[in-house]
Image 1 (cartoon, rainbow, N blue to C red):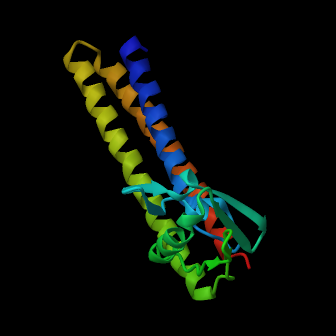
Image 2: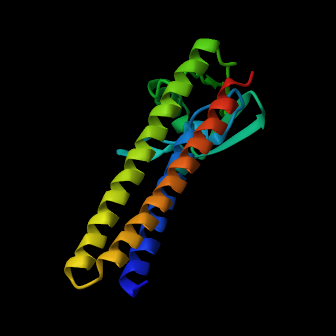
Length: 187
C-alpha cells in the first residue's frame, strides 16, 4: 500500500472517530431519568451582553439521581439562569432559594421516553450520513490516486478497505444507539 493510500486510510479513520465522539456527546444531553450536569449543556444565558454557557458562570452539581444544583458565582445571575433553563424547554422547573437553583429531575413518562428514542435515532442517522459522506470523499481521493498513476488493483484494494472501515463505524453507531435506547427505555 502506498503512502498516499495509508494517509487516506488514517484520515478517514480519524474523521469517522470524530463523528462517533460527537454522537456520544449529543447522547449525553438526553436524560435517562438520572440527573447529570450534561443535561444543561448547550443552555446559554445572557452574561454582560454575551450569550454564555451555564457551566462558565456557575457550578453545576448532582447531589443525587433526581436533583441538579446550579450555584452561580454571582447571586444576581440566579434569575437569568432560571429563565434560560425554562426557555431551553428541557422540561425542568428550577426553584430559586436565593443562594442557588434547585432542579428536580422528574421521572420520564413512557411517551417522553419514546420521543427521546426517536431523537436518538435521528442523531444516529446524522452520524451515519456523516460517516457515509466521509467514505465518499475517501473513495474520490482513491480515484484521484489512480488518475495520478496508482494501479487499478491498488485503487480497488483501497476502496475495499475504505468500505470495510465504513461498515465498522456504521456498526459502532448502531451499537451506541442500541445502548442508549436501552438506557432511555429502562425505568
